[in-house]
Amino acid sequence: MTEYTLIYVPDPALRAKSQPVSTFGAELRELVDNMARVMREEKGVGLAAPQLGISQRVIVLEVAQALERDGELIEPVPLTALINPQITPVGNDKAEGWEGCLSIPGQRGYVERWRHITYTAQDINGRAVQGRASDFHARIIQHEVDHLDGILYTDRTDQVETFVRPAS
Image 1 (spheres, rainbow, N blue to C red):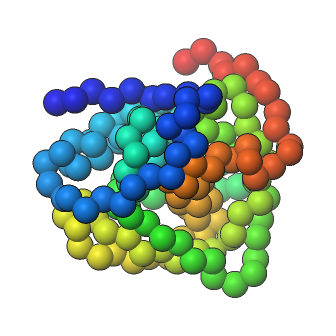
Image 2 (image 1 turned 135 degrees about the horizontal axis):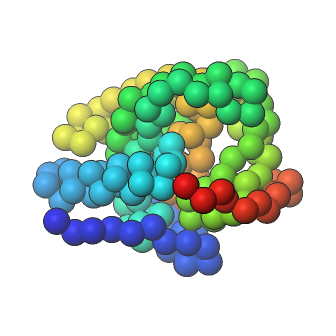
């Protein structure tokens, strides 16, 4: 099994537009498994393949249990892999919120995102999937889809703060 590791800014792979996935099988399953492993080890809630240096349109996300973040109750989201995702805003409602990124440790920024989105994608077997997400769930998907286009959250804000990550 190939072991993938997280890459960090300023690695140019984080700024490249990812290629659509056209082959579904064992190699894709291995990538998704590795992405979930890295995301969990790093205590993240989402990860895009470019963050492992892989130029493929693949994201994973998971909120394992309900939690409170910046005064907001966040509902659990089961482990989800979206292949070739596309998002569409629902309505005009946007919200600002703090975001961080595993590829930019020690920073977070205040970013405006759509509150409600729908998405279409493929699952790990290539079957079409669609869904709807709101609030933090929608924020995660938008953040990770941005990675697929070489966009970092720091491109969407001028409100960035630096902090020291507490030792775990």
